[in-house]
Length: 327
Image (cartoon, helix red, strand yellow):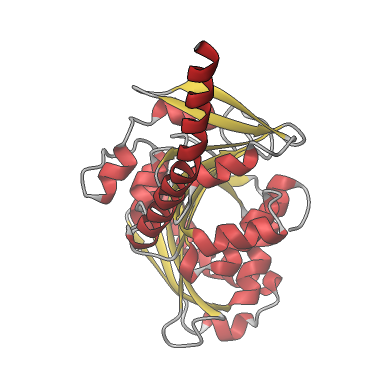
């Protein structure tokens, strides 16, 4: 009797397998359909995953900055088919470079878009180089995937959102209140703290943002360096030119006192022209629209128009200094 009952249960499971497979497939398709229509998390929501005091932050609207996004992925060791898939499905990216205590070249990236995390995780189950561990966040538990060859880690803390980096993924999940990125899409997000939030605020209005909380500018005649704070570079496709090739760059920076700010205001035009010349662009043409103004200890500039290839060269040089090899 027990054998007949067990056989009956097995036959029942066999009958239900096709229905179960169809149900799982329907759920997967409906989830992907939702990913196509739901809005991506805004930069301010992504910034909540980033460390509050990294050395630098980069924010990109990937749809309008495909090539810069590809160069950043390449610097992070993501190439070929994987890079193409990410670019196709990603709407926005926020990156922290040089997280304190994480070692040279460390990065943490938060991305939002049509990212089917549950499918990617299912694929990683079959990849021998990836291992999964469970970590505790704020009010919930997360799966973190690690590639042992290079230490890259990956997690999907929210629908349509991924966090990847060489360090700090677990800390990002513990720092992030559960569900806040999804709430931010609906206008209910909590404000992020630190330098990451200041860069993210500008990214709400601009295609690409580079934010440096602190850096040093070389002083003239080799007299040491000038400390700069809250350096913000903003870049957008130039509406007056070819949006696929020409970018308009503007920015601002802060100095310790007005005397230093006045000196930098006088120098910054020459420094900007010198840096433009290093990219290979014609500094004379670029300088025609360049304007520099000072407001107290803050110096702002605008009117730099560069072809995209020069923007990419400058980005490569920036990444080269952090990752040790050109993308």
